[in-house]
Amino acid sequence: MKNGAAQSRLLLAVETLAIEKRPELERLKRGRIGLKRPDFIWHYLLQSFATMGRASGSKGLIQNQNNYRRVTYGALSKLTPGRRRKEVHEVCHVAKIRMPDIKAQYILDCFDYVKRMGGPEKAKEVLLRQPDREAKIKFLKGFPGIGPKYARNIMMDVYHKEFRDNIALDVRIKSISKLLGLTFTEADYSAHEGFYLEVAHLAGINGWELDRLLFNFGDEVKRKLAVAT
Image (cartoon, rainbow, N blue to C red; front, top):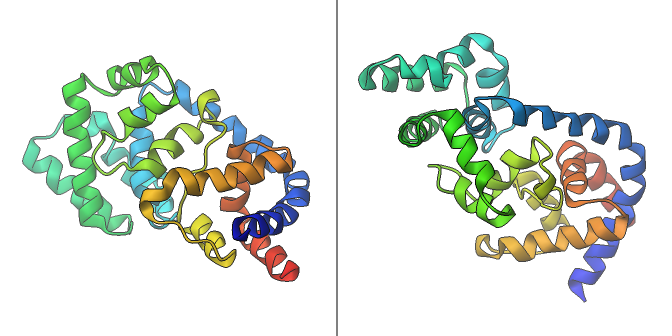
């Protein structure tokens, strides 16, 4: 009953918003071109670590080309292990991403992992050879620092056809769950995601569209929820 009431509240908040924000959702879907990048795996790993815990981290690590060029796979591959470690730690601090030393270690560990696979292009080939969505999620969770949220989000960022009915549960979406009076543990990822997928289907949109609405327009959703209380 509790989930049913929460579902109704959220549905009321997102139905009209989905119509209002349709142009923005369609624009975001053009991100599918990112899958064509030869360095797809490496670029989206960096983007994941840049935004993990704080979306604004992208400005310092991804959008700042001076910083970004220093941590491309090609640039790092030219350095000795010691110099690579120093470079990555320095860039993570200069870029002002959250938990820079932890993220730096993730990047360094991912570099070694990708290198063992033969580089970013080979890693991408292995990913795309995975037979289904669950296998792709499992493969991506094998990268150091990548959990269930980012294993989905990496593929959702490029609007991959197998990831259009997923929810990448982050702090913004969890804050909406809290506002709705819902409680899910970290181990309840599937049930938590399932709640939002049901709302998406009732609203006539897919999971990806609801995820992007809640991430990009979360404040509007919260205002609508407050009015509906």
